[in-house]
Length: 155
Length: 454
Image 1 (spheres, each protein chain N blue to C red):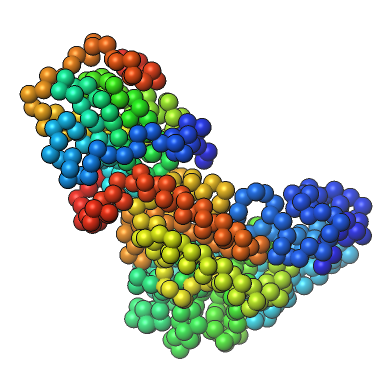
Image 2 (cartoon, rainbow over the protein chains, first blue to last red; image 1 turned 30 degrees about the horizontal axis):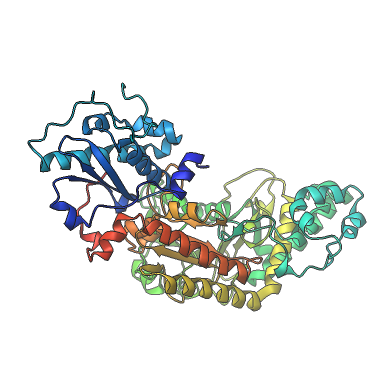
């Protein structure tokens, strides 16, 4: 099975690898949401950390991933797509868009599902830490720093 | 050994072209001016480093050379008993049978040619069970078979079929060292045991089972012993008499011969082992395997066996030194690196190593210039990690993190040096983005976390 050029590029040059702190450190931070999905026994674990403004805009995102090349590429791409978006906008990202962008074969679709799940889990964690937050409307114009690669999220 | 243009021309005017087509890549690199390139320094056919010799091996050019006349010149059917073409084919097959028998200490008549070790395993297991069954087909209690959970699928699946057909099968489980011992087999023996099938060396981890000891036990109890010697015969010494083997499967393409041919040793004396054929027809191979013989393939298999017998202990020592170097290099360069299987009771050409907190398929992607196998879910459709590593009690996470690196006749020390550097760099690259490695460094036991299963 050959990997697409985009998967190879994300594998060799993963975007936004890292964390805002150890698992213990970020637990107490209200501005950081953490999503960890998957299990080592299944061969995939994705950790996504997002740093969110009180208005609900994802200022920065970092990932770590234990998994195959497609899993690494899916999580790397997810961080690119959610940086600069509001949490509501980020929640509209679908795994099928990741499949399309990275040209994942059917056997690797679960990698994209995991990436979508990690976004949801991280946002859920942030919302739990900020029960009073009123996320900015999706209509708010994204800052110019926002990635342009985000596909239309009307689906 | 002469490998120049002249060899082909002597045989047939068209054969240089044929030969160039078949081994063109090596010929284009091996300068025709230096036909005496020593075996072990022969150029690699591609820029890749091939460390997957347990999957298949490069066919030795001397084997190809021996086969070539049997395609277009001596093309006869060995079953044609009344003309020269048939006699030539028959002579070639009988010479190959001697070469194959000699490798394992058998009589030529005891070697049956098949399409490969998978067929040999099927013929041995199903052929014996059906012939020695203690009750007719369709009834239960037809007899007992002993095998183990880390066999190749070509043994496990025929055993599962026997279960559906009324036989009882015991699947032994190895200890963490991966070895099936005489004691394990002895404990599983029953009065109605017909057959024991235990592989000599495991194909994923290279561990060596106590086959000669199990053979002695079987002969004491009048039970037939079959061994899948695909990763053993040709690499390690075999003496079917001293080792008490009744049936032995081996393959040509694992020992530098062509694909599509293999052998089954069937003991003829003390005891005489009988088989029910799986393929009926013209009665070739003493009725045990009908079908026109694959003459070029069999000639190549014979030549491959002869070459392996000649390379002997020196080649084993060379491969062992390479394996030890690789394992020492990788375990000293990084933490949480585990060599799977028994520390020493392993064949010299296979290393199976788990790199904690790194997934095997992504690791292979990082060492794209090295061809090897992974115990991870890389076998396309299946997302299950290696059942062999799981059978040893290696955790699923470490099973996903394993590489099988296997050496062969053309593996060089320089390639092993390169592999150590390349694998270390890829593991470090992946650990830098592994959340599990972070947890490990924080002192958290990854296996104790309750993961949300996906």
